[in-house]
Image 1 (cartoon, rainbow, N blue to C red):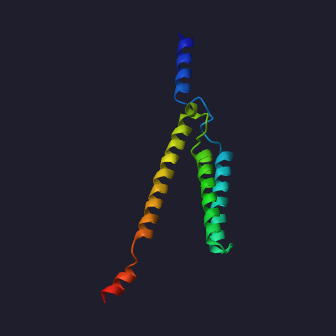
Image 2 (spheres, one colour):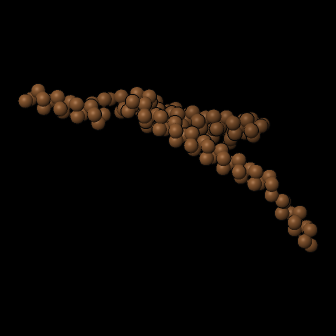
Image 3 (cartoon, rainbow, N blue to C red):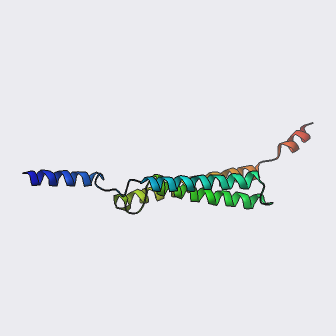
Length: 130
């Protein structure tokens, strides 16, 4: 009876992920994530405040690229999402969420840009009325 009790306890712990340490970060992984996140915050701040590049578009592109890298750092080091956790379903649901966010944001920006470009300037209307 003690064998079945210990077996039930072991399988119970593994079912809920308590027996695996792959999903929990170590102090070293948290510190690595923190240092990377801090570096990925300081670099864009320096680029913008120091006016390092003459082109605003280049600065924006680099800041956005570093933001994407920082998202990946947070996902890996703090959220512990990888292809091994929950049989890959956690990562798959995260990727699906990101695809939806990109579609919604992209469509919103596209609609707002088109609305802005199709609007008649207010200064012309004001000048015609007077």
